[in-house]
Image 1 (spheres, rainbow, N blue to C red):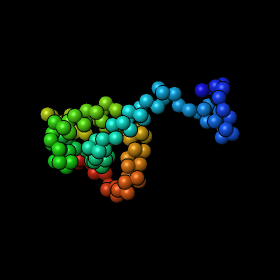
Image 2 (image 1 turned 90 degrees about the horizontal axis):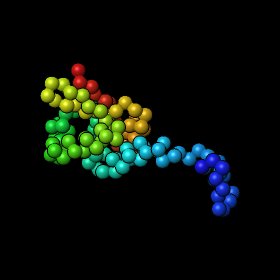
Image 3 (image 1 turned 90 degrees about the vertical axis):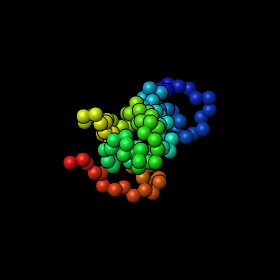
Image 4 (image 1 turned 45 degrees about the vertical axis):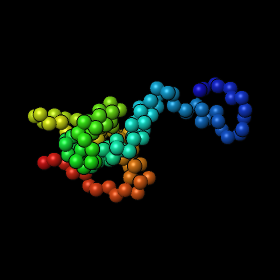
Length: 124
């Protein structure tokens, strides 16, 4: 947006802000992540996986959903880069991705929802 001429000058420093406005490509990942977390079920699953690594069956039990429904939500969260998985034998385990975006969204969820964050537990 550099060198863009605005139709009106309202004196709010729009030109300076426009110089720093992200492109659609730069913000696409954030947009996709927020779109996925717009669903209450995915938001709960994401929050859960911020605190522990779990398999589909346990996630389904914890969020009171069927395994196929949970698997669908996990696929969407994984494709948006918010969670990762690992295989141990026949079992798949899921956890939050170790990214700045995932950490910031986790913190935002807990701040806005006034949710107490338990200590993250790891499988030993």
